[in-house]
Length: 374
Length: 254
Image (tube, rainbow over all chains, first blue to last red; front, side, top):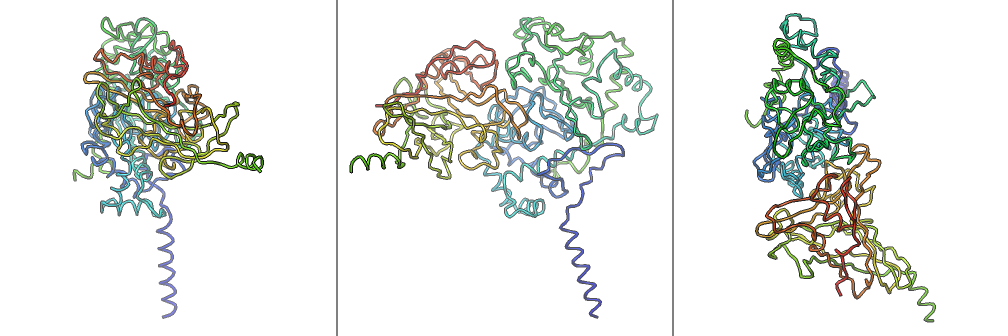
């Protein structure tokens, strides 16, 4: 009898010890894909991601209760909003287009042109608290987020589970950490292209395969900026210490032939003040690019066909209006955007390749879906 | 006896307050004023030094109060959230409280801004007043040193001032090439004359408030709307042609 009770005690002890140990987070990645980098002070956990999922979709995180993070990052559109440029909770227009969150965990820098932002925990503060333009409109009201965590029964439980070692888990900092963990968890490599790489030759069409060859050719140069497993040169991951960050002027504008971009969208220049940084933006990931129109930082190109026209010409010609100028002649343009000739069948092949980067599982995966809608 | 006292008193700290008020061309300016009304006026003050008649400096020590002041910085809030101040707060603070050695002063020097180390620390871990998210500039790293704005019936202007052209990453900024801290020196400040006016008409002297075009400046290197207020603040901006002027924005209210 005594033996049994000692045995039982050991089991209970083992369960207690085990349950207090953080379980390694399962990214559900295919073999050979590296895990994302995770900040040391915000380790991943299922509970934290779940808390973040609720917060991400909660309109109570906006000043007028009309908007959540998910309002500009719709799962069905690969976490973009389909607009040329986004609109904040109070109707204020944003100068830039909402970026996809799929695989943003691998981004070495966040947003379109910010050399300072390398952590989702820091980035999340801008849409939440920024007031120029107002996005979610919580500036000066962030204490309400902490209060919500504590007063809402669902959040009260989720926060305690997500931050079991915190005496007071109901803080803005923890809300931000949970949202960042949720967004970081949106990683997926299940496109036709990925299945092709994994050894299924029938996963993509022969035309798409030809398009892939064109994409990775020195003739078209696409891959210099949109290279690597995430199709952007601003990529990092857990197995590397090397930091790769790229910003490129792709010849969209050349106002007054001086190289200038519209004043509210000067790209890297706005952050550095260095003249040669005019019009330099991050090359976004091309994963799910067929779903994330319109294109470019300001949504000024409507379709993939027109994007190819833009790069084929080596820059955009704006004939009239306030932004008139020939972007092809922009003095700050990337050396990789020299233009190329493309016949109609090559154009179709390239489009088909870009469409093969669509990962449909992302659009419906319940791990990232809106819990309020269920 | 008197000599002993004078020497001893000289070594002791004495409480002193520094008060601020908002004016438009010398007249009081509030959120409820008209043509223009105030829409915002909040700013951080740091590096405060009192100066006596012989030119000697006496550093001002902030009295930490857990709300408006900590050791090296204080927040002045001259808007009350009413009228034109739609993005404002009800609470106001028009006074810095602290102490300095010395008794008789004839001048003051202060900085509009947050010291570098505090400016780039994590705002979610900061003590008041640096926990005020309305004053933080998340995407640039650092705080808005100054938020100021006015509106007329048909026009308006606001400015957010803070460090730009910062290098490094948000959690690890090494330098900001455009620090945009404004140092102000005023003669005539004393215990009796301790009220400082912030005259927005002078800050916005070069801004056209009659053209019906609402404009704003968020300290970006190519924002043409920043030229006039930056000139008034005595600051360069980006590669734009700016002619920094001596301070006429702040003056002692006698």
